[in-house]
Image 1 (cartoon, rainbow, N blue to C red):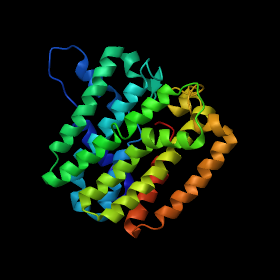
Image 2: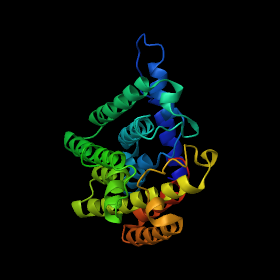
Image 3: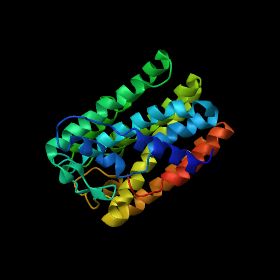
Image 4: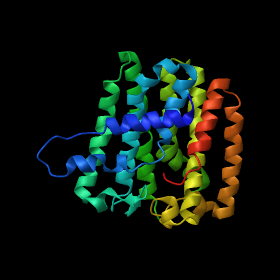
Length: 289
Protein backbone atom coordinates (compact mmCIF):
# COMPACT_ATOMS: atom_id res chain seq x y z
CA UNK A 1 0.00 0.00 0.00
CA UNK A 2 1.38 3.45 -0.90
CA UNK A 3 2.40 5.70 1.97
CA UNK A 4 -0.05 8.40 0.93
CA UNK A 5 -2.87 5.86 1.15
CA UNK A 6 -1.62 4.73 4.58
CA UNK A 7 -1.62 8.34 5.70
CA UNK A 8 -5.14 8.96 4.38
CA UNK A 9 -6.46 5.82 6.08
CA UNK A 10 -4.95 6.86 9.40
CA UNK A 11 -6.29 10.41 9.09
CA UNK A 12 -9.76 9.08 8.33
CA UNK A 13 -9.52 6.72 11.30
CA UNK A 14 -8.42 9.56 13.60
CA UNK A 15 -11.28 11.84 12.55
CA UNK A 16 -13.77 9.00 13.06
CA UNK A 17 -12.37 8.21 16.51
CA UNK A 18 -11.82 11.58 18.12
CA UNK A 19 -12.06 11.60 21.92
CA UNK A 20 -15.54 12.42 23.23
CA UNK A 21 -16.88 13.82 26.50
CA UNK A 22 -20.67 13.81 26.56
CA UNK A 23 -21.37 16.05 29.53
CA UNK A 24 -22.95 19.41 30.22
CA UNK A 25 -19.54 21.12 30.04
CA UNK A 26 -20.01 23.69 27.25
CA UNK A 27 -16.61 23.39 25.55
CA UNK A 28 -14.50 20.51 26.88
CA UNK A 29 -15.25 18.07 24.06
CA UNK A 30 -14.36 20.71 21.49
CA UNK A 31 -11.12 21.39 23.36
CA UNK A 32 -10.34 17.65 23.48
CA UNK A 33 -10.54 17.45 19.71
CA UNK A 34 -9.05 20.83 18.84
CA UNK A 35 -5.34 20.02 18.46
CA UNK A 36 -6.02 16.62 16.89
CA UNK A 37 -8.14 18.20 14.16
CA UNK A 38 -5.54 20.95 13.64
CA UNK A 39 -3.36 18.52 11.69
CA UNK A 40 0.31 17.71 12.23
CA UNK A 41 2.75 15.31 10.68
CA UNK A 42 1.37 12.07 12.21
CA UNK A 43 5.04 11.03 11.96
CA UNK A 44 5.02 8.64 14.92
CA UNK A 45 1.87 6.68 14.01
CA UNK A 46 3.06 6.45 10.42
CA UNK A 47 6.33 4.88 11.56
CA UNK A 48 4.37 2.19 13.43
CA UNK A 49 2.01 1.60 10.52
CA UNK A 50 4.90 1.46 8.03
CA UNK A 51 6.51 -1.38 10.00
CA UNK A 52 3.21 -3.27 10.24
CA UNK A 53 2.44 -2.79 6.55
CA UNK A 54 5.94 -4.01 5.65
CA UNK A 55 5.73 -7.28 7.58
CA UNK A 56 2.05 -8.20 7.88
CA UNK A 57 -0.42 -5.95 6.00
CA UNK A 58 -3.33 -8.03 7.35
CA UNK A 59 -2.68 -6.47 10.78
CA UNK A 60 -2.82 -2.89 9.48
CA UNK A 61 -6.45 -2.22 10.48
CA UNK A 62 -5.93 -3.76 13.91
CA UNK A 63 -2.89 -1.54 14.43
CA UNK A 64 -4.76 1.71 13.76
CA UNK A 65 -5.96 2.08 17.36
CA UNK A 66 -2.40 1.66 18.66
CA UNK A 67 -1.14 4.24 16.15
CA UNK A 68 -3.90 6.56 17.36
CA UNK A 69 -2.78 6.01 20.96
CA UNK A 70 0.72 7.23 20.04
CA UNK A 71 -0.74 10.32 18.34
CA UNK A 72 -2.89 11.06 21.42
CA UNK A 73 0.13 10.80 23.71
CA UNK A 74 2.27 12.96 21.42
CA UNK A 75 -0.46 15.59 21.14
CA UNK A 76 -0.81 15.74 24.93
CA UNK A 77 2.94 16.39 25.17
CA UNK A 78 2.70 19.30 22.71
CA UNK A 79 -0.24 20.86 24.56
CA UNK A 80 1.66 20.75 27.86
CA UNK A 81 4.94 21.84 26.24
CA UNK A 82 3.21 25.00 24.96
CA UNK A 83 1.82 26.00 28.39
CA UNK A 84 2.89 29.30 30.00
CA UNK A 85 4.80 27.36 32.68
CA UNK A 86 6.92 25.69 29.98
CA UNK A 87 7.46 27.23 26.50
CA UNK A 88 4.62 29.76 26.68
CA UNK A 89 3.96 29.38 22.96
CA UNK A 90 1.15 31.04 21.02
CA UNK A 91 1.08 28.93 17.87
CA UNK A 92 1.05 25.19 17.13
CA UNK A 93 0.24 23.38 13.87
CA UNK A 94 -0.64 26.73 12.34
CA UNK A 95 -3.31 27.40 14.97
CA UNK A 96 -3.43 29.15 18.33
CA UNK A 97 -2.21 26.89 21.12
CA UNK A 98 -4.89 25.31 23.28
CA UNK A 99 -4.39 27.57 26.29
CA UNK A 100 -4.84 30.54 23.93
CA UNK A 101 -7.97 29.15 22.26
CA UNK A 102 -9.52 28.16 25.59
CA UNK A 103 -7.64 28.66 28.87
CA UNK A 104 -4.74 27.19 30.80
CA UNK A 105 -6.86 24.92 33.01
CA UNK A 106 -8.58 23.43 29.97
CA UNK A 107 -5.24 22.85 28.23
CA UNK A 108 -3.82 21.03 31.27
CA UNK A 109 -6.89 18.82 31.60
CA UNK A 110 -7.06 18.04 27.87
CA UNK A 111 -3.42 17.00 27.97
CA UNK A 112 -4.13 14.77 30.98
CA UNK A 113 -7.13 13.27 29.21
CA UNK A 114 -5.25 12.46 25.99
CA UNK A 115 -2.40 10.93 27.98
CA UNK A 116 -4.60 8.54 29.96
CA UNK A 117 -6.92 7.76 27.06
CA UNK A 118 -3.99 6.63 24.91
CA UNK A 119 -3.53 3.63 27.21
CA UNK A 120 -7.26 2.92 27.15
CA UNK A 121 -7.02 2.68 23.36
CA UNK A 122 -4.24 0.09 23.60
CA UNK A 123 -6.09 -1.85 26.30
CA UNK A 124 -9.03 -2.25 23.91
CA UNK A 125 -6.97 -2.92 20.77
CA UNK A 126 -7.74 -6.22 18.97
CA UNK A 127 -4.56 -8.03 20.03
CA UNK A 128 -3.70 -10.67 22.59
CA UNK A 129 -3.20 -9.58 26.19
CA UNK A 130 0.52 -10.41 25.97
CA UNK A 131 1.02 -8.08 23.03
CA UNK A 132 -1.03 -5.30 24.63
CA UNK A 133 1.00 -5.53 27.83
CA UNK A 134 4.24 -5.16 25.86
CA UNK A 135 2.81 -2.19 23.96
CA UNK A 136 1.70 -0.48 27.17
CA UNK A 137 5.05 -1.16 28.84
CA UNK A 138 6.89 0.38 25.90
CA UNK A 139 4.74 3.48 25.56
CA UNK A 140 4.49 4.15 29.30
CA UNK A 141 8.27 3.89 29.70
CA UNK A 142 9.37 6.00 26.74
CA UNK A 143 6.46 8.42 27.05
CA UNK A 144 6.90 8.63 30.83
CA UNK A 145 9.49 8.75 33.60
CA UNK A 146 12.23 6.98 31.63
CA UNK A 147 11.70 9.01 28.47
CA UNK A 148 9.75 12.11 27.54
CA UNK A 149 9.03 13.31 31.07
CA UNK A 150 12.60 13.33 32.34
CA UNK A 151 13.69 14.90 29.06
CA UNK A 152 11.19 17.71 29.52
CA UNK A 153 12.15 18.11 33.20
CA UNK A 154 15.82 18.51 32.26
CA UNK A 155 14.93 20.88 29.41
CA UNK A 156 12.97 23.17 31.72
CA UNK A 157 15.32 22.98 34.70
CA UNK A 158 18.46 23.82 32.71
CA UNK A 159 17.09 26.82 30.82
CA UNK A 160 19.70 29.59 30.68
CA UNK A 161 22.41 27.03 31.54
CA UNK A 162 24.57 25.53 28.81
CA UNK A 163 24.77 21.74 28.79
CA UNK A 164 27.73 19.94 27.25
CA UNK A 165 27.02 17.96 24.08
CA UNK A 166 26.56 14.53 25.71
CA UNK A 167 24.06 15.93 28.20
CA UNK A 168 22.30 17.78 25.40
CA UNK A 169 21.98 14.50 23.51
CA UNK A 170 20.68 12.79 26.67
CA UNK A 171 18.03 15.52 27.02
CA UNK A 172 16.76 15.18 23.47
CA UNK A 173 17.04 11.39 23.28
CA UNK A 174 14.64 11.26 26.20
CA UNK A 175 12.39 14.20 25.35
CA UNK A 176 11.97 13.50 21.63
CA UNK A 177 13.80 10.46 20.28
CA UNK A 178 12.47 7.77 22.60
CA UNK A 179 8.83 8.24 21.57
CA UNK A 180 9.87 8.03 17.90
CA UNK A 181 11.90 4.89 18.67
CA UNK A 182 8.92 3.46 20.57
CA UNK A 183 6.70 3.91 17.54
CA UNK A 184 8.99 1.66 15.50
CA UNK A 185 9.39 -0.83 18.35
CA UNK A 186 5.62 -1.07 18.88
CA UNK A 187 5.17 -1.84 15.18
CA UNK A 188 7.70 -4.64 15.60
CA UNK A 189 5.87 -5.97 18.65
CA UNK A 190 2.56 -6.05 16.79
CA UNK A 191 3.95 -8.11 13.90
CA UNK A 192 5.98 -10.42 16.16
CA UNK A 193 9.53 -9.55 15.16
CA UNK A 194 12.29 -11.16 17.22
CA UNK A 195 14.07 -9.20 19.95
CA UNK A 196 17.14 -8.46 17.81
CA UNK A 197 15.09 -7.01 14.96
CA UNK A 198 13.05 -4.93 17.43
CA UNK A 199 16.24 -3.60 19.04
CA UNK A 200 17.60 -2.60 15.63
CA UNK A 201 14.38 -0.72 14.87
CA UNK A 202 14.52 0.99 18.25
CA UNK A 203 18.15 2.08 17.87
CA UNK A 204 17.39 3.39 14.39
CA UNK A 205 14.50 5.34 15.93
CA UNK A 206 16.81 6.98 18.47
CA UNK A 207 19.04 8.25 15.66
CA UNK A 208 16.03 9.41 13.64
CA UNK A 209 14.66 11.17 16.73
CA UNK A 210 17.91 13.06 17.29
CA UNK A 211 18.00 14.05 13.62
CA UNK A 212 14.39 15.20 13.91
CA UNK A 213 15.32 17.37 16.91
CA UNK A 214 18.36 18.95 15.27
CA UNK A 215 16.23 19.79 12.23
CA UNK A 216 13.59 21.26 14.53
CA UNK A 217 16.21 23.45 16.20
CA UNK A 218 17.40 24.62 12.77
CA UNK A 219 13.79 25.39 11.78
CA UNK A 220 13.35 27.44 14.97
CA UNK A 221 16.39 29.48 14.02
CA UNK A 222 15.73 29.94 10.30
CA UNK A 223 11.95 29.84 9.68
CA UNK A 224 9.11 32.27 10.26
CA UNK A 225 6.11 31.24 12.34
CA UNK A 226 4.05 31.05 9.14
CA UNK A 227 6.54 28.68 7.53
CA UNK A 228 6.92 26.48 10.61
CA UNK A 229 3.27 26.53 11.69
CA UNK A 230 4.29 27.13 15.30
CA UNK A 231 6.04 29.65 17.50
CA UNK A 232 9.66 30.11 16.39
CA UNK A 233 12.66 32.08 17.68
CA UNK A 234 11.62 30.67 21.04
CA UNK A 235 14.76 28.67 21.90
CA UNK A 236 16.99 31.49 23.09
CA UNK A 237 17.10 30.24 26.68
CA UNK A 238 16.90 26.57 25.71
CA UNK A 239 19.55 23.92 25.31
CA UNK A 240 19.30 23.51 21.54
CA UNK A 241 21.81 22.13 19.07
CA UNK A 242 21.90 25.51 17.30
CA UNK A 243 22.64 27.35 20.54
CA UNK A 244 25.47 24.96 21.42
CA UNK A 245 27.00 24.25 17.99
CA UNK A 246 25.95 27.31 16.02
CA UNK A 247 23.79 27.09 12.90
CA UNK A 248 26.53 25.74 10.64
CA UNK A 249 27.60 23.24 13.31
CA UNK A 250 24.02 22.03 13.75
CA UNK A 251 23.61 21.61 9.99
CA UNK A 252 26.88 19.65 9.84
CA UNK A 253 25.73 17.45 12.74
CA UNK A 254 22.37 16.84 11.02
CA UNK A 255 24.09 15.81 7.79
CA UNK A 256 26.37 13.37 9.64
CA UNK A 257 23.43 11.87 11.52
CA UNK A 258 21.40 11.58 8.32
CA UNK A 259 24.23 9.52 6.82
CA UNK A 260 24.32 7.31 9.93
CA UNK A 261 20.56 6.77 9.65
CA UNK A 262 20.91 5.88 5.97
CA UNK A 263 23.58 3.30 6.84
CA UNK A 264 21.34 1.76 9.52
CA UNK A 265 18.42 1.68 7.10
CA UNK A 266 20.43 -0.37 4.63
CA UNK A 267 20.70 -3.18 7.21
CA UNK A 268 16.93 -3.74 7.34
CA UNK A 269 14.81 -6.23 5.45
CA UNK A 270 14.05 -4.79 1.98
CA UNK A 271 10.32 -4.31 2.62
CA UNK A 272 10.94 -2.45 5.92
CA UNK A 273 13.70 -0.38 4.34
CA UNK A 274 11.50 0.61 1.40
CA UNK A 275 8.49 1.60 3.51
CA UNK A 276 10.49 3.45 6.16
CA UNK A 277 12.47 5.33 3.55
CA UNK A 278 9.25 6.55 1.92
CA UNK A 279 7.85 7.56 5.30
CA UNK A 280 11.00 9.45 6.28
CA UNK A 281 11.16 11.24 2.93
CA UNK A 282 7.54 12.36 3.30
CA UNK A 283 7.45 13.24 6.98
CA UNK A 284 10.88 13.99 8.38
CA UNK A 285 11.42 17.24 6.54
CA UNK A 286 8.07 18.92 6.98
CA UNK A 287 8.07 21.95 9.20
CA UNK A 288 5.12 21.38 11.58
CA UNK A 289 6.12 19.38 14.60
